[in-house]
Amino acid sequence: MTTKSGPPKGTDQPLVADAGNPALENGDSKAVMQTDNNSDGANQTSNAELGTDIQGHLGRKLKASYDEIIRQPVPDRFRQLLEELERREKKE
Amino acid sequence: MTGLSPTLRKELLTAIPNLRAFAMSLCGNPTRADDLAQETLMKAWDKIGSFEPGTNLKAWLFTILRNVYFSELRKRKREVEDADGHLLAGLAVHPAQLGHMDASDFIIALQQIPIDQREALILVGAEGFSYEEVAAISGVAVGTIKSRVNRARGRLTEILGLDGVADFGPDRMSQASIAPGAAGRSE
Image (tube, rainbow over all chains, first blue to last red; front, side, top):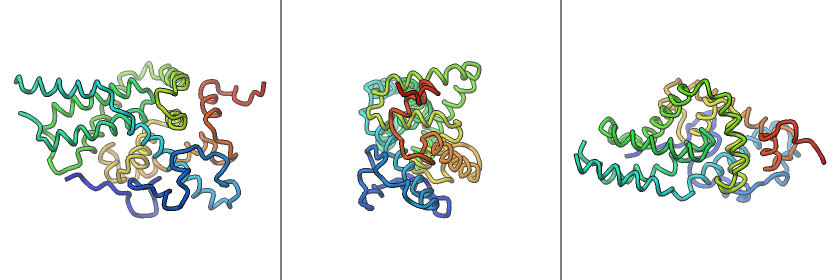
C-alpha cells in the first residue's frame, strides 16, 4: 500500500533513520529529546570524528524537534474541516 | 467523485500531524502552518480522483502542500523580505506555541537556511523520505536533492554553532535571531 520510505543506501547517508530510536540502541537516550549541550564531549574528539558527531547531533535534533510537533494534538479545526467536506460531499 | 474509501480517509487523517509538522518547519509560523495544512487537505479532497491507489499518499499530500506553499511565496515575493524578519521575531517571542524550547529553537534555525535546502533537509532528515521520493516531490533531480541536503547540514551546523564552540543553547539561539549582535553583550 504505502510506499516504503526507508533511508537510501550509499555514501550519502540521510541525517537520521526514520524508524525506531537509533540513539537508544547506542545507550545515549538523553540525546534524543533533551538539550544535551556541553555534555556530549564532542569537542574532545578528533576532527574526523567531530564531523560524524555533529551530523549525528544535528540529525537527532532535527528529528526530535519535528517529532515534537507531530505529537502535538491536532487542532479542532481539522476535525471540523473533514466533517464539513463530508457533509458537502453527501449533498452532491 | 462520490466518497472516499474508508482506508483512504483513514490514511488522510493519519497524515495530518505530519502535514502540520512539515508546514511548520517550512514556514516557521504556527498559524500559517495550519492554514497550509488545511488548504492541502481541501485540495487533496477535491483532487482525490487523481491520486493513484497503491502509491504513497503521504508523498502525494506533501507534494500538494509544498506546491501550495511555493506558489504562495511567489505571490508574496514583494513582501517577503519584510515578512521573514517579522516571522523570526514573532516566533522568538512566542516559543510556547511550539511547546518545548528546544524544538522552537530548531525551527527558528531552520528558517535561516534557504527554502529549497530547508525543504530537502526536512523531507529526508525528519520525514525519512528517500532521496528519490524527495526528488519526485520537489520536481528536481536526485543529485540536486543530495546537494541541497548537504548544504543544509553545513549551514545549520554554522548557524547552531556546532562547528566550533560547544555552547549551543536555547538562549543563544533566540537572542541571536531577535537581535543579531546583541547576544555577546554581558551586562
